[in-house]
Length: 363
Ligand code: GN1
Ligand code: MG
Image 1 (cartoon, helix red, strand yellow):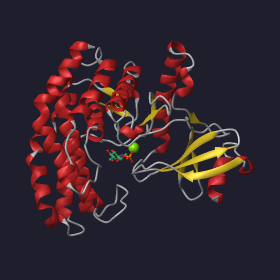
Image 2 (tube, rainbow, N blue to C red):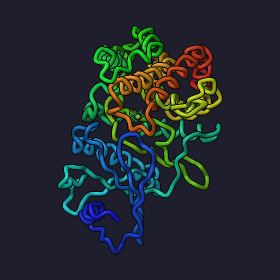
Image 3 (tube, rainbow, N blue to C red):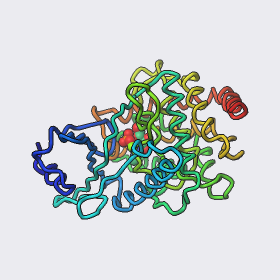
Image 4 (tube, rainbow, N blue to C red):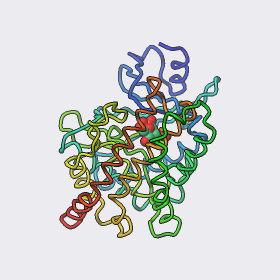
């Protein structure tokens, strides 16, 4: 067992003799995660990537505020379920983080005995939609504007577009000539990149507590019943729009293929999965959604998919400095797959709108 990890755990009062194992865990693109099993408990330890998250202490304040709010609600309205919520563990001296001598930040949380999935059938998608919808519903009364903006402009697609133009101009790795088609597609969508941010700025779209990373694998499921337990990966909780969460969730969950699928003929937007997720999400949030949000739900899926694609493209042009890659052209493959998906979503928007309206009326 790594000595530095043992030193960190000792700050939480966990001694090396109590530890059965420490294993790398999960497959996030940003943080490094470990599962720790002691003789009496199980924990998740995470090293926070502070190139991405500039102020880990403020980030932890967001997480603690939001999870305490949810825990309080569960204790009141769903007694027994409060243990099934995300729980940050404090160090012996009462801190939310350990700052190591080598300048790294670590946090510990309780591990809930559950599973995550990378893809799912209709029932799983329904549950995942419900769990994200429920999360939003639980936080509907939380004052969104009190949250710290962990990564400013995170889902500001117009700003993400400008970052792409900057990367094309710098062309640090000489890769721009290799991605002419991708650049052309990215530019063709430019005029639509500010639709949600403009709505937020003008007040037309309400400011909400937003998770901002609503991937399918960020929902914990009961390993026997496959029912949703809670939402995890709360680093990017910030003020934002429900549309970011709905759109980004479907980008990932309703894709027919992996995020970096090489065979683009396999990449399409799966309408059955879309319907399942939408049914679950809307059932929990129907009374909170405003007209201005409903109007843009289908479009938000296209926008968030496009946005993720331009982020991967920007990183590819910049030399792969942001997203972890496991092979040299992974960011390019991710870009191509996201763009193929966005184009398929574009053609399906009228159908998607019908389905959204069906569940808004029904539930
Ligand atoms: C990153 O690390 P992970 O997989 O939770 C990224 C998301 C992207 C996602 C794409 C802080 O999330 O915004 O949608 O990769 N998180 C951050 O897979 O940038
Ligand atoms: Mg994440």
